[in-house]
Image (cartoon, rainbow, N blue to C red; front, side, top):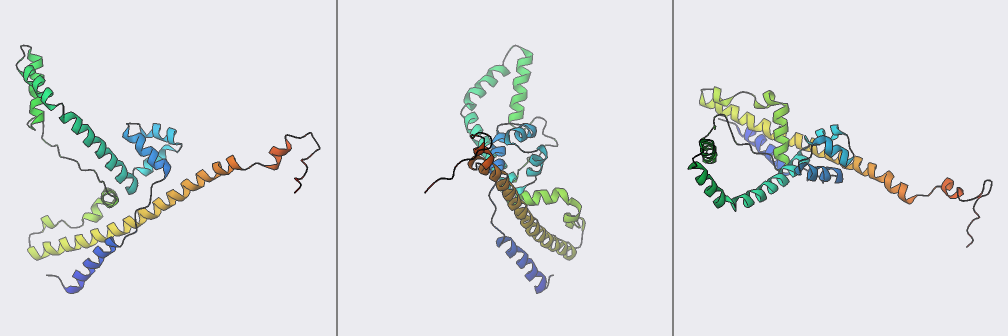
Length: 233
């Protein structure tokens, strides 16, 4: 069993998650990169079009806010594609039925394989469904698990036979998970804010260049040794 202090500490950890910082916005470059990645562009192609280094695209893939937005938009695109495919399901079934009864053995086998795959009876061993993180919190946790698998898992509750010990390990795991998620999330917020600042700094010189005219540029329009007269009020 657990004392009140332990329960209170766990509650405080959960409250920290509710009080977390709001998710920062993505930079224009990041939003453009997401649109290009959804279209199937490679990281190298995206870096060339957006105007950033390829290593920057790689870094963005580990950014939970970038990852969450990318996965959300990808799923929306997949759902739209699924709806369009479902509209063709009846025609596809008719084609498979005709192929299954074809006199050409290769066509019949191909149709049979497609049918078995459709109903989940063909080559399913070892295959598991993959759920991509679609919120910053899920992305933070997925990245933390990838980076710190051994330290975050801690002791395995399923390997402990005595109930109270197993229960204690689960509580400790919950505490560590809440704490790590809160810390990693705030680190990600700071990193994205830094990304936003860098993006604004990159855009500012271009704006200044388009609006600012130097004395040297003005003097180029006058003969050597002369300078423009001051404007009279």
